[in-house]
Image 1 (cartoon, one colour):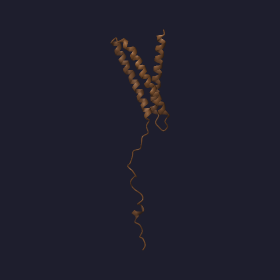
Image 2 (cartoon, rainbow, N blue to C red; image 1 turned 180 degrees about the vertical axis):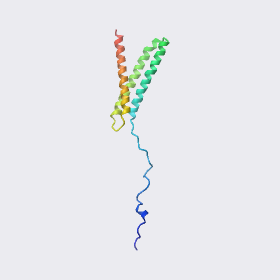
Image 3 (tube, rainbow, N blue to C red; image 1 turned 135 degrees about the vertical axis):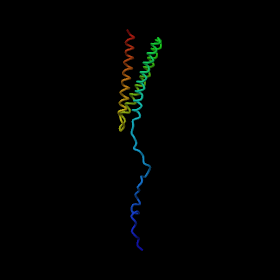
Image 4 (spheres, rainbow, N blue to C red; image 1 turned 90 degrees about the vertical axis):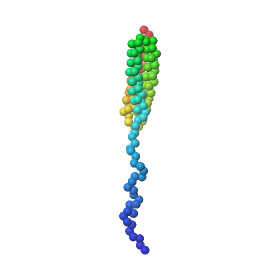
Length: 130
């Protein structure tokens, strides 16, 4: 007995019209370290504005004795946040295949903040020596 010719549907049985698994959206490649660097930079800038308003209110209330410790606290916090933004921004820039704009902006803000902190401390040291 001879076998009849396979029907056309049997010839395509090995192919599927459906994907092997569920359809997934293309994955977005981000730069989380760069984003954290940018967030730290923005936080330190907002902190600077808040501290300026607090200092203005202390001066208006003639609470001059609170200005110096508050200024040093602001310097310390800004310096730490600026340094962290520099480190995270630099690491974010060093990562290959990741977007670098956010990391670069965070790094730039961190450098500007750290330069400001260091120059402010130097100014205070020089001014206090006269």
